[in-house]
Image (tube, rainbow, N blue to C red; front, side, top):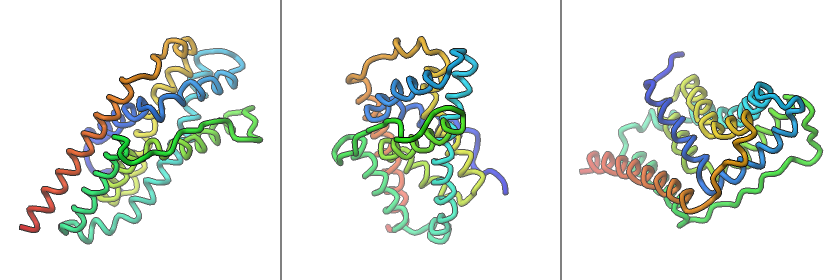
Length: 224
């Protein structure tokens, strides 16, 4: 099994992960998770904060990689109907729905991140489990961009490529958390939520609309 695509894919999905972490639905969770990590970091060292943050995001990555595996395994539909205008129209419309979610035309579930009841954060394994749960909690918030990445890996039908891309995407989403978890002083310096978060979300929506149009054009060329 070999990787498909190119290095640019990984820079693109990492950047997409970073962008989605600065949207109004995900960004408010960063201080919450950072405070939990600070509580686990009993030594109070930057190295330990870095390790704990990495383990937390690894839990998120395992959740997203699982979705990537499922997408790659079910991607045979893309392979069988790769030149079908119906497939391109379907993908284009799905991307358009994702864009409408980012523009708040279609309502998005609110984020309610908290420490799961009964989970005692005494070791890295607990942090890993919390990361996996956190990945599910913020799933609806990342759905438009995450769904686009899943559509892409499904079209490639390559497990290794799917897992590696979703892994990189996860660490893009968690990049700001790793920084804050490592350098606890950054927590107080985080910019407050405001209109700038909506601007980032709108930029993501515009990118999804452009991508949707690309698939509509491909469908049109096959139909006419």
